[in-house]
Amino acid sequence: MKLTVQQPHLAHGLSLVSRAVATRSTLPVLANVLLATDEGRLRLSATNLELGISCWIPAQIAEDGALTVPARTLSDMVSVFPTEAIALSLKGGTTLTLHCGSSQAEIRGISADEFPPMPTADSADGLVFKAAELKEMIQQVVFAASTDENRPVLQGVLVEVAEGEVTFAATDGFRISVRKMALDTPASQPLRLIVPARALNELARILSDGEQTVTMLTPPGRGQVIFRQREVELVSQLIEGNFPDYKVIIPRAAKTHAVLSTSAFAKACRQAEIIAREGNNVVRLNLQPRTDAPGQVEVSAQSEQTGATQVSLDANIDGPGLLIAFNVRFLREVLDVIKTPSFALEMNANNAPVTIRPIGDESFIHVLMPMHLG
Image (tube, rainbow, N blue to C red; front, top):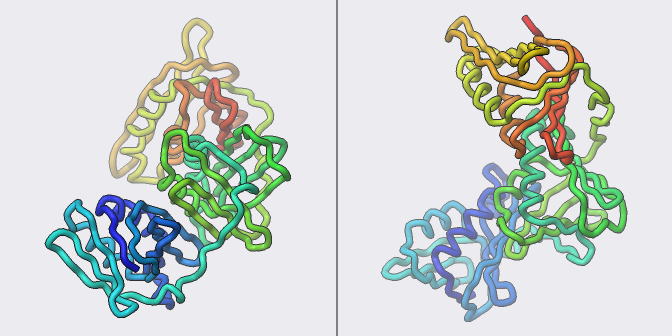
């Protein structure tokens, strides 16, 4: 292998794939990144056997070849090189040499033959998304997935494709986040799979913005999903199991309906969180409808150790008043992904699931369980 790449391209590529490098593994090669020439470009790949990321960067190829080298060592070395061309070549078969300006280095590696093969699939069989829309879909659901390793199914996002529509759903048992999107080209067949939330988080991180598209592929019989963009590809193992029927939890009607400003309510929640985070994260909402003026929502939190805070907000409230409590972090996280200026809170009782809907956007819905009023 003998080639030349630009330092910014190599540094960027390494930053994309490095999150898939195994941090603890009995296989030394999983701590490495694969460098391989591929049809006139340099391919960088890393995997921990559950998640794999590859990217392709421009290169001037003089001689084809491949080698794996420790990801951290290579990333750190490239980061301190000047922003000039870097000449890469092999020495003795398993040592990578780097020359950049007046700097040079040698990094000992492991044969590319020991690196796990990355799966491939025909892009013609895939489901095509716009990159910006897919990133937004991921961001609007992935935060609601569980982090409890004892509940692996809830650590994933349910992806359902049917009748020209794709739905992403995530839940941790206390909240449910659902985002739907119409497909420009209907899928050839229904699809239902559970993708690890961590993999989707990484996908959202590496996706390029703009008008680029992303193709989702599911190689038959492998229990894997591939997301492919023009210069980057992510592959993930799927989660096996039965995802809970979240649809039966979503309330069909509400007795109290309140419309609030998204930004004002988010600011009030951030203020309440300063106090609530020192205790049990409880924030109270006191909804007070009025007939002769806008209704009021009092957002309050108190802690014996820290103190208390309260903010009153105008709101359009239909139905009876209600005092209800939530985990303030859960409220803030859903408010962070609502894209509309106002949203609706739909409630039946202070111990029943509450629905949160952006006003003017029917593609997103969030359901949140209240906390006990002590």
